[in-house]
Length: 350
Image (cartoon, rainbow, N blue to C red; front, side):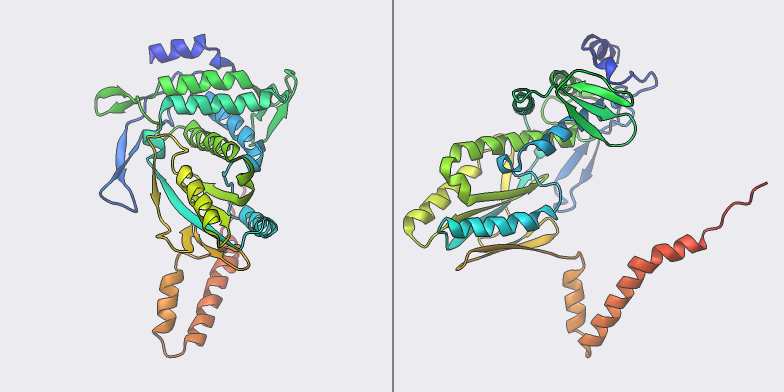
């Protein structure tokens, strides 16, 4: 702790947040993965980290940058709602390019946090910061209260905001990756590979790292980038490449999809999930790739969709059961909060 505090003060991070005197190291533990109980996910909580205030403010700065990074340069998706407009535009663009069909893949990026190399993360942050510095941006103002962030081309301070200069992001990332200490029983250990799962900076660093790799991939495609579109939500990514019925076009699409598998850090593993079909599950919905004319659709699904369908088929009057179920769901969603609010009692004033 003394070494971390000394490095924290020397690097000048104290201007972003005070060092917590009552801070402590998190106790590491593992939990089984919900999709595969044979594998475990390591967790290193950092709620009591002495530098948690500076970490929270610095985490909002790169998040502000990546949201303002042009969408055509990366695949990061903030919400499933954004896919609707992009899918319509992409289908029209493929038709203008003369494509009559498309090939799609869906991957799961395994071990994103625990296996990614530190050098890969540092290079990605440097590329992102350099992109905005070339365009004249100098700092990100982070609100002391709330989630508001403002980018500025000056170094002027503003009341109610904490100034995070772009060159300070390099220092914060270097400090986070070089001081990932945690308690393992009664022993203090340091994580040498991967990003600590539990810090506020970890999700945004993983997002920035993948986004910069995707930017390099699209840049290397040249003119072929017009027939490529992809969407990534954290560690789930879907990519669609337009093509025609000609053999040369098929080979080009296959070559693009094959090169996509190696754009991320070599320590990360991409597991294919689409099983070679033209439809697959993706972020709570289902993707559909159709041909002649080429179309790409995304249909949102509910968690109990399959069990609901099985229940409907097992009854004698499916229409009535479906109607009753939908009415019950609507009552619970819309009238439940109102009833709970009416049932609360107000405290009497003395």
